[in-house]
Image 1 (cartoon, rainbow, N blue to C red):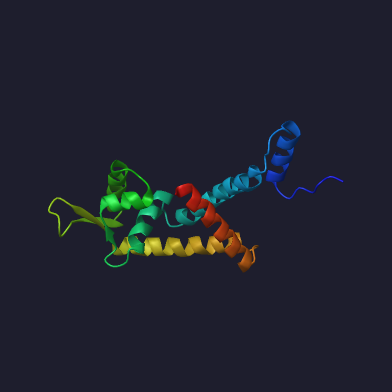
Image 2 (cartoon, rainbow, N blue to C red; image 1 turned 60 degrees about the vertical axis):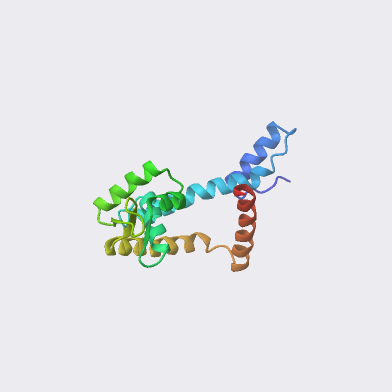
Length: 166
């Protein structure tokens, strides 16, 4: 009796097993699903951010500032580290967010040459609203999993990530 396929990954894996029976394609059962989930999550996040006229990178920078707490400011270098971009890219991003009124630059109090990037009230309002919408959409994405299943999945993904990220 043929195995019932529950998703596209099952079809892909079965095809590879048929075409390359000499290879162990079991990693695809996990990693192809993660890849497909990541694409869906990117689409969901983009939709949540677009409602607030934000790009994903804008949300990343604003949320990094929001998470640090009052006074919601970081150096451009710290922002770059948190959002995994170069200093040149961060300079461009801060310029664009400042033009929108979401952040402002101010002199660093302990370094005459240094600058801090601070979240404005408008920036805080837009990132808070976008974050609320994002969480609502992500809750819907996970609704089919029981709480214990979510916890187990989170633990397994954490283990995999800590191995990969060292």
